Length: 123
Length: 107
Image (tube, rainbow over all chains, first blue to last red; front, side, top):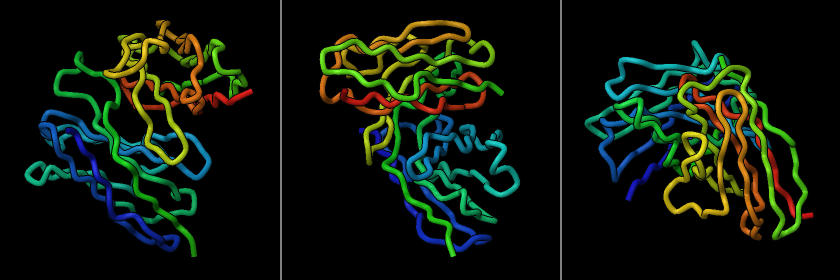
């Protein structure tokens, strides 16, 4: 059974930092890109960032470029999101999701999601 | 960067009725890599449709997807009580952008 379990959310002051983690199990972690998606309270889904299997390619939504860093540790089957210079508008539930596989032509959207972790940026 | 626009914002229907949701892309979606998700309050999104028209594992055949290029549609043939939720489209051929969502509510 595929499981994605996020942790690390909490309350942080504007300008502060937070590191989110996502522990993956039930599939071969190194076969997949991984993504972070967030959802502000009462709002829609926003894709935040993704990372290739070996970490050699990373992409970000414009609003977090230069502030957030996505990374992974394949030995620990874990995905991370380092969030710096946090702003009130970063307040959201952050989900990790399994992204595309090695072969682009086997892509099928985000089949699996974690339950999310809440990040609140407030003084 | 492709922008996805969903319409309508809210759809008010009764159980048993047919729901038709639209997703329009600002440019052609490569390989029709367009997915649909359902999200209920307090839950993570659930994949319904990928590749514009393929149902994900375990998804009822009440749900069907169609379209290509820039215009895509999610159809729910006969609404069941559990289908009232918010639906998002997403393109996954380049960036992973989502549409803003369509809420299907009970009339």
